Amino acid sequence: MSRYIAVVTVVLLLLVSFGFSQSSFGFKGIGGHLSMNDPSISGDVDPGFGFGLGVNANLGEIIPGLFLIPEINYWSTSKSVEGIEYKLKDFQINANVDYYLNKVFEGPFVGGGLGINMATAEVTVPGIDVPGYGTIGGGSYSDSETKIGINLEGGWRQPFSPTMTGFAMVRYSIISDMNTLSILAGVTMNIGGK
Image (cartoon, rainbow, N blue to C red; front, side, top):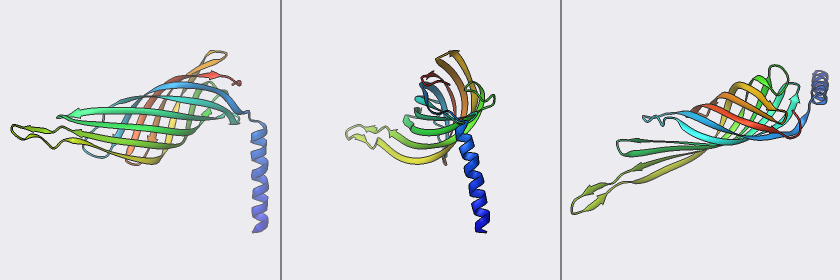
């Protein structure tokens, strides 16, 4: 049994070392993006679409065609129903890996990754004005949670110049009771090559 484990370990180390010898891992670029987000939360209120912005980086190829793309995103949405104001915000730190079908940092890609989601929900209830007594009730209530999410994404990256690429993608983030469908579009400035 231990011989089997040793052989598998050696084979895996050889495959990984071959993959990294073929890679160009390292800081390659930085950029920004805008997003439109549609969270789906449990409960009676649909928070509607929200808008956000973010920063992304290209840390190069892990193995040929597989690029590491970390990001920081922030988005928020709000909705008013019968005088009650609902707000939902999410600050995300994502580590995504995108596979480019043509093995270079352009064209169609699919990918996924993990994200840390720091979400805040807030509800503001108006008070009731009672003549002779003033305002009764009302107030603002909020709750925050940090959750790990799984990102599934796909899109297209198009070079605009030798130093800049643009991208558009669709992402579905699975975050327990706050799954989110997002459409992102942005640019990446290529600093260290493609």
